[in-house]
Structures are given as C-alpha cells and as structure tokens.
Amino acid sequence: MAFTLATWNINSVRLRAGLVGRLLQEEAPDILCLQECKSPVDKIPLEAFAALGYPHMIARGQKGYNGVAILSRLPIREVGAQDFAALGHARHVAGELENGVVIHNFYVPAGGDVPDPEANEKFAQKLTYLTEMRDWFHADRPGRAILVGDLNIAPREDDVWSHKTMQRIVSHTPVEVEHLAQAQDAGAWVDITRQDIPEGQLYSWWSYRARDWDAADKGRRLDHVWATPDIATAGHSSRILRIARGWEKPSDHAPVFASFDL
Image (cartoon, rainbow, N blue to C red):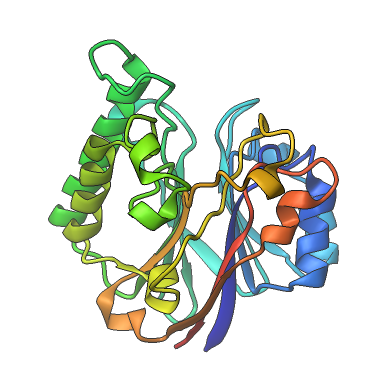
C-alpha cells in the first residue's frame, strides 16, 4: 500500500473548512491529520469532506479548544486515545489502516509563555505530558506506526530562525527539547521529515504577530512526522506546504507531508 499523509494544525476546522477542502482538492493526500480543531466531533463538517472523497474520520473533540481528527480516503478504525497528564483534553487519537499501520495524531500542549514549571502551570503540564508519552512508549514499544502532529517543540537548531534567541522561548528551550527527545527515543521514532531533508532551516509555523511573516521568516518547525524503524525506510517525499500559510485567513501553521510505500 502506498499513501501520502499530511498533518496540519488548522486552528478551527469549522472556521477553516474551506481551506481544508482546498488542501484536499489541490494536494489530495490520502490521509489528513488535523490538530486544534476547536470543535465537538459531531460539529466537524464531515459531509463536506466526504463529498471530496474522504468518507472516513476518527476524532476527539471539545468545544472551542484542542481537538484532533484524521480524515482518510482509506478505511481506518479507531484504536485508542490517550489523555496524558490527565488534562481531560482532546489531544490524541490513533487509527489503524487495513494494512495494520497505526497512525497517532498528537496535539502536545503549547506550554504558555514562561518556560518555568514552578511559575507556569501550563509549562509544567507540557513537561508532564511529554514524560507520560515517553513512559507509554517505553511500556508498549510501538511497531508499524506513524506519529504526526503539532508537537509544539522545534527540536533542532535549524528548526528555528535563531537558536540563540529561541533557547529562552517556549518551544525551543533545552528542557523541552530534552523531554521530546526522550519521548522520541522511547519509541525509537525516526523523524521522517529530517530523514528526507537532513540539512537547512525548515519551518512549519509563523506567528500571526508578524506583520509580514513571509519576509520576516521567523519560523519554527513545530509540526512533525515520525515513524517506527520497521517502516521508516518506506517514508519519502517529505515537504512543507509553505504557501498555505499565505492563503486567505490562514492557520498560523503550514501542512507537513510525507509519503509511504508499505
């Protein structure tokens, strides 16, 4: 089975249903994983997506916040959803394709603005979330699996516009990078994007606060595609659809793509 998947923090699936439809029509991934859907599951416009050839959906949602969904051309069945850090948030859902590959769709907490777990409860929750991800992967080592989503951490120096500046900013602080690395190592996850594009600045998020985000280009690679070692060599053709950040009323994230021949 060969398929292409994309992951995209859509920042409201109902508000940006038109952009989702545009992506499905113009780029036609077989599977689209969305984060920050900000919608109860029954309010996600599945009929519109089904009309475009995506009749299958598994999701976790809540009103106004968080939310993850997997839209698919291919049959997919839900196989779980984890509530790490006991936040009661819709931040993870997993689905299994007919070939046995499991796709995990994650939305890791952003962590607020202050990178101090004692002064900032949200930052403490983020670190706990990542620790529990690590422990889960240690306890039940994944196989034939793909993990995607907005992990809200840019781990490498070339995943941010300025490593020196960003070390003091939530999403690239050393403690976050280390926590993410531990979770990645626990599952032996391979970063497919960087397997394909090993060198150079690479971003998937640009702040709404930038008057001209494209010219300023102060981005971060917060959105990721990982795979377990047994299928990582089947991953290829990674890319970030930067142009989508410039669509009308866009998300502040751009979709990240990868293809797999399995």
